Picture (cartoon, rainbow, N blue to C red):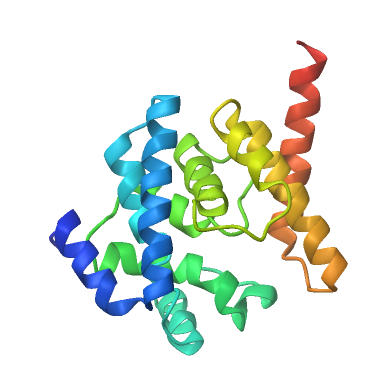
Length: 198
C-alpha cells in the first residue's frame, strides 16, 4: 500500500486519537527527532516512528487482539487483555497495513516502545526513551535526571527508565511483563561489561 504522508498522518491521528493522546503523540515525535539529531540517527524516521508509536492506543482491546492474530504476532498472557501493553504490537501492524510504513526498524520501534527488548536498535531506544521523557510527562520519578541523561548517554537513560519502571510496578503490585524484566537484565549486564572496560 502507498505510504501516507506526514501531514495526512497527523490529520488522521488527530481524528482517531483522543486529544490528550494526540498531544502526547506530537510531543513524542518532536522529542524523538531531537534525540535522533543528538545521536546521528535518521531524523525523519524517528519523527515518523514517534507519530505512529501510539496509533493503536485508542482502539478496542479485542480489535488489537485481532490485528495481532491476523499478522501472526505472538501475544503473551500479560499482553492479551492489556491495552496498555498490546497497543504496541497492534500499532506496528496498523503502521504497516493502514499507513504504509514497512521499514522493519521503524516497526520494531513501535512494537517494543512499551516493554523494550534485549538488543534494541538506536531507533528503538530513541522511541522508548522519547515516550518516557516527552515534555507532557510529569508524574514519573527522576524525570529531570533522565531527561538530562537521555541527551548524554541514551543507554544509561534506557537502563534508568527500565529500573524505575520495575520499581514502580513492583511497588503497586501490578504484574510485570517478563519482557520488561528481561530487557532490564540484558542492559544491566551490558552496562556492567561497559564499565568493566572503561
